[in-house]
Structure formats: C-alpha cells, structure tokens
Amino acid sequence: MTNRGNPRSLWSIATRRLQVPSSKASAEWTVDPTLNAIVGLRDEVREFRAETRATLGRHSHRLNLIEVTLAGLKADGGVLLSSVPVQNERLDNLEARIAALEART
Image: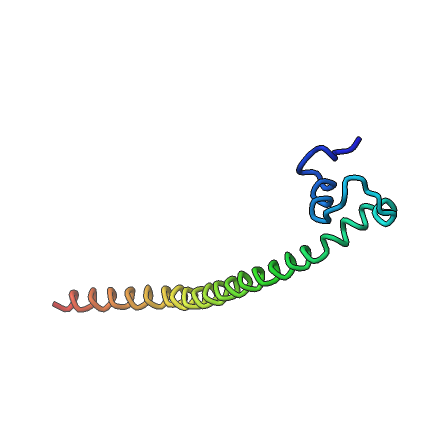
C-alpha cells in the first residue's frame, strides 16, 4: 500500500522537492527512490542541524548562567542558615544576662 496520493507523505514531499517528473522516466530515479530523496533533502537537513546547534548553544549558555546564579544563591543561603544557631545562642545569652540584671534589682 502506498501513500502517493497523500499530500503529506514522504513520497509526495520528496517528489515535490526533487521536482521529479510524474513519469519517472529516469533510470537513476527508478533504481532507488529512497536514496534519491535522501540526497535531495541533504542540504535542507544540514541547514536544520546548523540552526539546531545554534539554538542549543544559546539555550545552553542561558542554562549555564542560571546554574551559576543558583549555585551562588545556594552558597549565600548556606551562609545565612549557618548563622542561625549562632544568632539563637546570642539571644539565649542575652536573655540570661537580662534575667541576671533583673534579679539584681
């Protein structure tokens, strides 16, 4: 079963891009239509790969920047969280001092 009548089939796309005559009189074309379609689409695929590489490069750079920023925020958050016990200890000492001062008076 073939999809030659379907406008979205690979066969239809390949014949349109290669501008193959409907009679397919060429011996080269009748030998291996798949190979001819691949060869015909080669330049388009190269352009697509180049565009994909450029896009991935841009997004990869952006992701690297986000990753560096998150690492910096994580380090800053770690410093803040590590200071919490020290702050609690200082508050406890302050409360003890205040209680001692109140006891004197």
